[in-house]
Image (cartoon, rainbow, N blue to C red):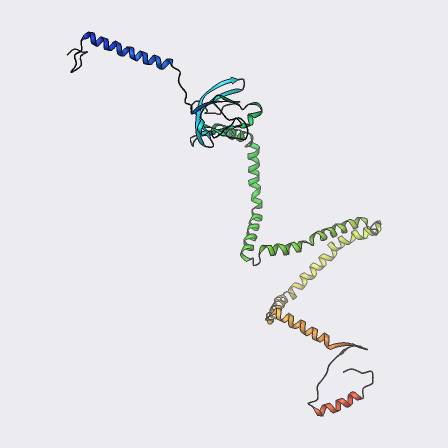
Length: 353
């Protein structure tokens, strides 16, 4: 069988050449038509051009374009528009824009955890609805509507921060602060211990305690005012205006320091060996007295009642307080008759009873 033959068919050399020429001509016609006819764009996609001052790192043809986190298209091209101006061409899905207008703002952001950049669109009020061929100028006064938050930009900002803030002077300051903070460690520990002790032993709500502390501190301003008044009066006192009196007043303080305080110190130092042992006894006596009162609140009420009754038992007389007492002797006839006779012999003005 010849090389151009096909099993089950009768093909001669002339017919084979004719079939090859026809197949080649058909392929050339199809290729020409495909190249000559214009490519029809889908009515679903629209082209939008953004004029920006700069393009974020990683933004290029094929970069995803997102609207509030949802992919709505891609970047079809980036071109040079003018000095300091760039042109970003977007291919967007018309049905996914949901009324997006020219009053939009854009962010260059990382699209995933690997730092691949994406272009994020954010809608805003106003503007015209985006259509095929719309151009949005985000330069000059609108430059604040473009934000670069790509990974490269963040790393650049971090490098600038490290270079401008973490200077040798700041390092020295932190070292000095950490060294000096050791001196405040006991104070901080005391504050922590105090706070822990308070939380463990507190029996009243903090509001009640703060109220009582507030009432106690209410006297601090008058005390300070009085102290300042005393200090001010010492400079305007007429008595101290004379030099002679001022010298006497100034002599008093060295006398207290050099004469009175040493004498008091010597007195207590001498009395300590002789009377130091009495302090435990006094403490024990006071402790026993306090324990002898089983109910302090009840004892206070009973003592108050006793004093009130004693006060009512006395009345004012010509010669001072007189006890007002009455004795019932009807059941003792042997004493009632002599006492009645004695009362009858008392002067008219009365007397002590």
